[in-house]
Length: 101
Image (cartoon, rainbow, N blue to C red; front, side, top):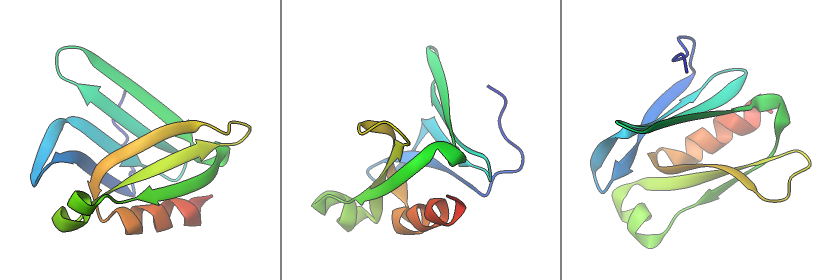
């Protein structure tokens, strides 16, 4: 997958306080992109116009480390579609996505 150049937000997942270089999230005006892996890789994306709900979860350990997980649900699908796991400023990311939908 081509890395978007016009992203509004980009971050890695974190393992404790260290960035996980093998999971990268991108948010653009049109979609959310997830790139995972090093040897075996996977890429996924969800169009912003298909998002119906955005939920923020923060465990106790995530709160201590300043992290959180943003869950994204799509229209017509009651099940979780995508997780942005262990990201910094998760509350701001949730707000940014909510503004776009």
